[in-house]
Length: 239
Image 1 (cartoon, rainbow, N blue to C red):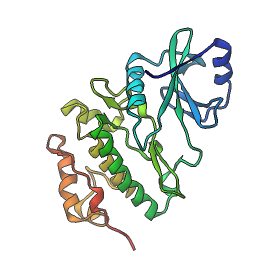
Image 2: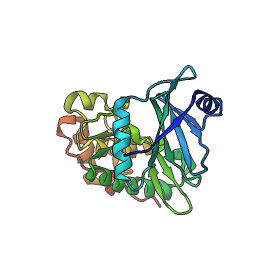
Image 3: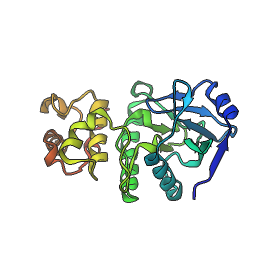
Image 4: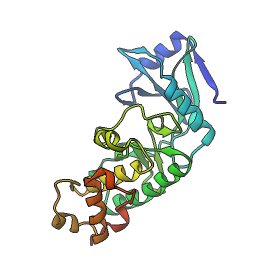
């Protein structure tokens, strides 16, 4: 069972007064008392709120899975018997980069390696949906990659808590299924080259993608026909 770190009101108030490392729609990231971990605390108007049973169950499963290439949960955080977040692993050499901060070689490396990681997650029963550079941590010196925001995955019957806007139509048509990671990864590849699965012409697509990718992009336009193929193997190398 995942350990539970019990904090009192004074301790959690001290944490909430710190500068946030990152603030998201559901929670914020704070430094912990350990240089190798961070706290993810769920709060509203600077008051802690329950993390929610769905996330708690997923964090417990992830703790037992100990997935490679992912930020790992260390413990749940409790205040007055209420689970308000969790402690997770961190590495200061792993950072999330924006597209313009990386070279073309690094971008292609990230796209290819992240595909393999998503397939590995799927083999472990974890469907990662919010595939975006902001959720991919990268060590430029070693090439190590880790996915973060792991509490927003789908595991077993525990659904995604916050669905990316670009998946709303997909979800309404076929639900969050095994092909979601490939669909979202393909969108990331297209966005990287300023392409769009609906509006980009074949002429524009062929500037960056080999012919087999065009058929995959076409299948994405009719969500029912998408079969989970990735387009990244067909990205052209630019000289």
